[in-house]
Length: 255
Image (cartoon, rainbow, N blue to C red):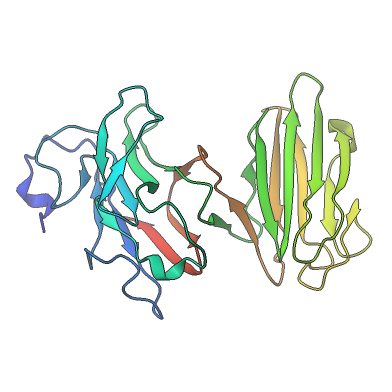
């Protein structure tokens, strides 16, 4: 493993480094590496040059061909994820997600590369997160999946309760910005969902007139709220964050 001290002193513009913490009950989530540390130049011990913003790929198979990117390059997964956490047959020759350092934003970013594997960010209670405009935001509350789309030109927010394990028929709602805050829960809310895994007042969606953005907050719900990272979704990493990957939860700490 390469320590930060081995790099040139002027090679790092920031001391922020990411540490990956696998679940206690599943220490072999990442097969080929016990300790995973990512700095601004990529994964320590794997990168041989000093190129900032190098991508670190996480996937099930060492071989990964990215045919969707404009450069048409052949990538290899740096970190191999155990396929035992998956409950179905999937395309193994792909990346699940990758992480890189964005020099413009001065933050680490995570980008999902698959829709076949459940990857989600666990939203901390009472901490508002920004919802993407003009894109579908998939949110899991308890066992219920919501599709939330914000139309900036219409100043409307569309919310669909997806059919699934606990919901038999899809339900559609739409609200204008002046109808916020929107509450979603089991009872006495703007949208009521009859499901035991949903808290009485599970989440709130509010509109900030200054930033002209919609924000979602988990109201300290019993079963939590997750932002599903569907294919192409990019998320900024900051502080300590927890993710679900398949059937297991892991954490990323920034130090």
